[in-house]
Length: 386
Ligand code: LLP
Image (cartoon, rainbow, N blue to C red; front, side, top):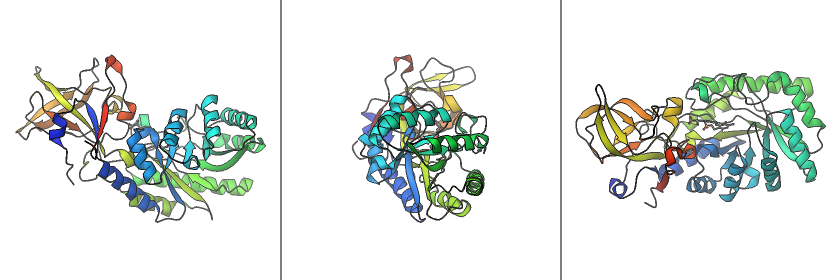
């Protein structure tokens, strides 16, 4: 359905800002949960890194979804939103002692451990507290994903996870620790994945590994976590406002062979919040260069870094004009040549003061904003309170 934006309200708000369609957010979260619930023992966690806005987290909590965190700050944000600690998992290659201690004190469900030194650090801090920490090993499955190089994580060359050759060593280490309990295996191959074959490849690896562990060590762990990665359609946000969760979960149900009683966990970020967010910005100037026409907007790469950082495409709409189309480069005011949202985009005839909607910006938009050039961080408005 074509997105509806309250343009009159927008005209009275200082730009740039993020606008969240809360109905779409709720529908997306509910659809994901409903589709996952069709299978026994499927659990959905929300990857907070995609968007930690308190209203978004409140909506996630309302639906009873758990949290996947990658820093002490994210663990705190999850708990502050009311997400129960037994639904919080904590991943990341560089957890500091302070972050581990805080998560232990909060009694979170599971640490996704990525190395022997990290396991030793958790063991020491858990021992000091007379506690036993539940841990899963993050395995690097060496599966490439058809996505941008900066957001693939499951290749042997990436810093993430434990490689197959080191797996025995890490299991031995955890088993020798009195304050660690190995409860699962964790995987994540990358982000913005729209090709189910990539997830099928991951399922193959998980199956292989489960057989290997069962045959060589007699181990069957109760929890398998396959991370996140389901992509969204940046090219057609209206036609695909809710991602195809049915196909996604059915793919795992068919290809991942769970052992009896095993639980399967997902850490979805982008697919849950990507389409509900839009960056709203105003055209400051239209400038004619020698061979280009620029629409210079008041949002910059500091507000939405994805185009500059990954060459990512976000659909842009002029909400104020329906005039005949012309070709523009849409650029921000930041002093960097990479501060470009889109090159050679066809847009209706644009003038100073027009309002643009930069679509599909709910994930890794506001969460990655920064203050370069002494620019203020973007504010957020919500469809139910605007
Ligand atoms: N689990 C782990 C271990 C992850 O590293 C990530 C994302 C997720 C889950 C959630 O993945 P998602 O479902 O959102 O694909 N800033 C980049 C994306 C970075 C993703 C980092 N890890 C972007 O804007 O495209």
